[in-house]
Image (cartoon, rainbow, N blue to C red; front, side):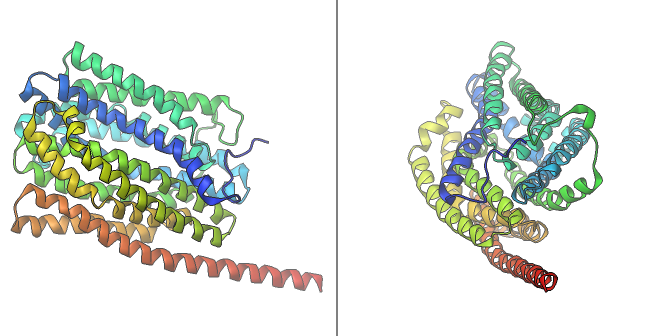
Length: 470
């Protein structure tokens, strides 16, 4: 029988985390290059200075809205990954193929639904966000093109989550490398040759999503592995779907709440009707994302590690993993973001050459946000660890209040009192800090409660064995 790619229920913890995280890190960076390539291409070759600024703002103003609309369904990929990691830890390999076919079917149905909704409602939703008038038409075109690739994006994310849960974090890297290269070439073709601006990069991104989707499905269909896929077995296995939904819906709601908070802050920034602010904020987020993705790869590794060891019922190993991961992501975040800010000016000029106003605004936002990124990684680590243990609802509720709630409250209080675009950015630090404290406390309570449950089960099993022996 085929075996899992990485069994995290045994072996030294840090080498396992690094071995798993490195391909995830590279995969995430390549995926982010989709957005970065969009921004750099339109920022450098999208026409004259004014046209480039408008196109860059169009892409940036649409990003959080696109993420919001698909967040719940993207979160269901977490449910698929948890289901597979528990099966791996418990050595119940027969359940994995049911998860694969249920997950792909769910992704297909959800993807088509979201593509239709995103295409039809792009304009009214962007208007609701107070998107600047000069940017609106191009933002609508970008968003509609982007949503043509959403079915492929969801299918790929579900399949990649399943592969990652079996310990295969390298294969998704290969698929995204090919798709990422195609995305850059298509961006240049659509913007430089056909001069399509924001629409061009939206089309390039959608096509690239379909390339990665087709590649992962072909791989899973041809491999005789635990995760093998076949179109004739597509369908919804209701007990499996129920478990996926139980794990995934809270994660999806949490992701959507994150994006609601981001949309609220984007709307506040849009309210100044200033393309310098919108484009500067966009490129600062783009530049800062890479250090976040590196730390997030270790959070993903910890999530799979905790999931497999939950299946194996090894709480001591879980505890050590989370502690070591917390120290690792904190140190990495502080070190990398220090270097990033020292080098930020030439990096930001890649996105907006000869536009000093945009670059200066972006540099200030990047400095403010990146100084507190470590808090984001810590809150995410403890929330992901609890999801790996099969507890999703409580972390979700904390995230809703701590991330979305704090940001909305901030915009309606502090921002009203101090109406300055920089005031918006400090909402990130406040929300990350409050959420981290709450998630840490909940993690400690959850870990002890689960451990006591396992000890009780073990005691009952020993008692039953003793009775049978007698």
